[in-house]
Image 1 (cartoon, rainbow, N blue to C red):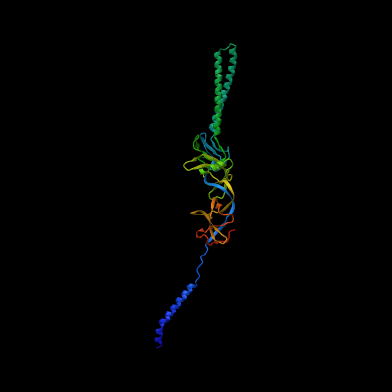
Image 2: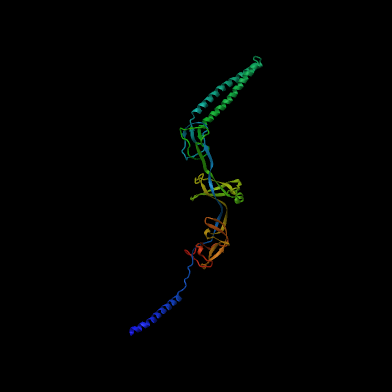
Length: 372
């Protein structure tokens, strides 16, 4: 009997258990608190005051100040090379020697011919003087006198010609000693001692003058008026090889006389002392021309400036740690900072990283605390 009674009451017990569980779950859900969305983390910086140079930037090509392809002016055998490839040489330094013996012989022969005809010319002049007196006294005829005078004149002309021949022989002998026409850096040799060279043929070596040297680059034609206005004084230029921290200082020394219509640019050339020989002919360098300096400009990191449909803006972090969209007018950018013309004052805090998750008026979490 007891078993039958328990069996009949079992469905009621199960119903009560299920009802209790349902009520408990409902109460639990009602007591759960809504989750608070975490403020997005951001990196910030303060707007600061800085003197900002106004620059034009371009890619330039380094050129030697002067280049000479040195050739022999006489034919013969190279008997000496007085330098090594890549040496720095001074103006007038002896670089090559061509066998001088044939030219020494030519000079000696020319000098001997000159001495012979000089003696003959002196004798002819003396004879002409004597015959002039004899002709005036009627002892010799005018024809005899004229013949001796013509002979003296002919020998004098021959002496002048032989003097020129001696000078030319000296010049040819001097050409055997090939000297550097300027100070500079030598390149690779194309010939060596023992080789025969021809007159005015293949260059023996090329010399580049690299102290000073030029850097040539092009700028947009819209900058022409600005550059021309500053050409009266020294317009400073900086050049730096990519990947190098060394910056060379120079000045603009040439502005082309026409704009290239195909590119809309004008060719500019700057001269660099290059005392450290940092720059090398043929290199490409980063060039910056300083046109002016903005004193006391308000600047922020360039990465803080965003661009939207309404123009440029920054996210300003307010004292209550909320983000505000602040429209700004920007000026030039240089070395990671941008000049703010309007919209910010020094000391304003702007977001430099993490802008994607920001909502105007929403809270932000500044990484590392407030900026210094």
